[in-house]
Image 1 (spheres, rainbow, N blue to C red):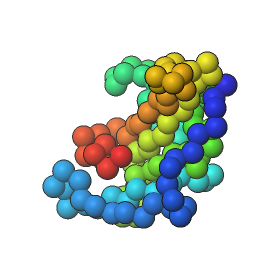
Image 2 (cartoon, one colour):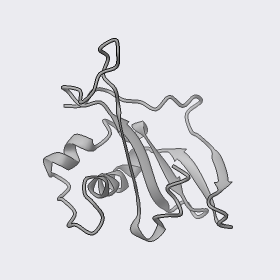
Image 3 (cartoon, rainbow, N blue to C red):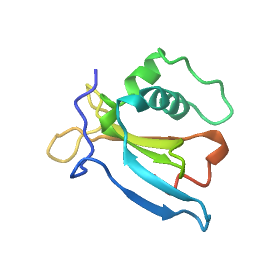
Image 4 (spheres, helix red, strand yellow):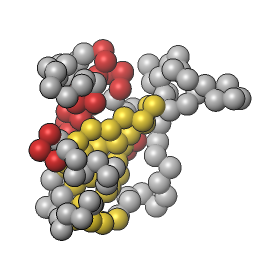
Length: 125
């Protein structure tokens, strides 16, 4: 079971565009929403394995355990057409994997990028 997690963004959506790694293409970083859930599941599958290894199924315990509680707890990097290219989110496992000095749970950061954009989009996340 995961604790409730939300990104510390204000005013709803994050609307920032910026060039990445000198690439002339521009990326938009935005808060994910319910329509992004299938993409977040695919990104979670990618985040669960080392590159080049078979992806786990969407219902694999490792995938389910790393999914954000809700799509709104993630940020999505998209290209100028709106196509999602990568995602980042954090989760707090129950029981927590790590605690701070006061004994409070520390979040785990997860992120993944579609294969064809690796090395280009990760800086946007």
